[in-house]
Image (tube, rainbow, N blue to C red; front, side, top):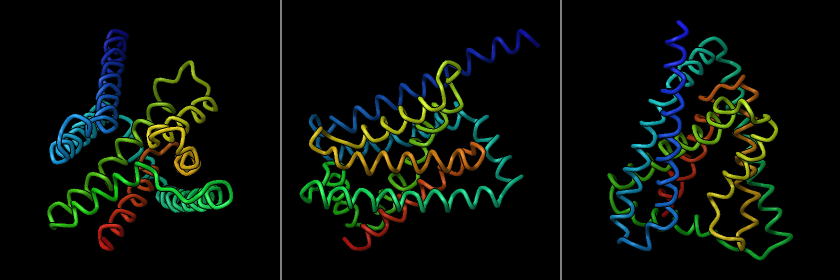
Length: 231
């Protein structure tokens, strides 16, 4: 039994490191890929990268998903209530960011939102492209981000990292990857707020990863569907 445990630990470590490496490469591509290739090629590689990273995440963290499914079946009301609570907190974060921008900065649009708006216009040309846009942005991307910003910092590898420190770092990192420069600092309130809301939902649900995943998916898919329908 000891031998099996020793062999399992390195395999587990290798899996999450491989997943994290894929995510870092994907994030780098999203940030700079448009500077090297045409938009259709950039979008195709980005979408394929998200799907590949999600599948790798399912494989690397299958025990976390299995545990979360067991918790969901055992305490379905807690899972549902935590999801609704998370959505309410994300709404509060959105409202807070609007207050900050109203009182402290002139109205601006982040580069991240500009890129999303451009994708909306492109995806509105056909049903297939629209479904692909919602599928990746509304479902695949949130799953990947919840693995990165909830499962990784709060379940592994955190033997030397205090939970409070992990919360702060994960929320700041989530905000940072959605910004494109210091001039967009006001949007940090929005994205850090989103991360805090999802983290609270995660802890309230007894660290059930499926809760922030469902919350994030519901928020993104609803918002992107609305943008697509009103394009």
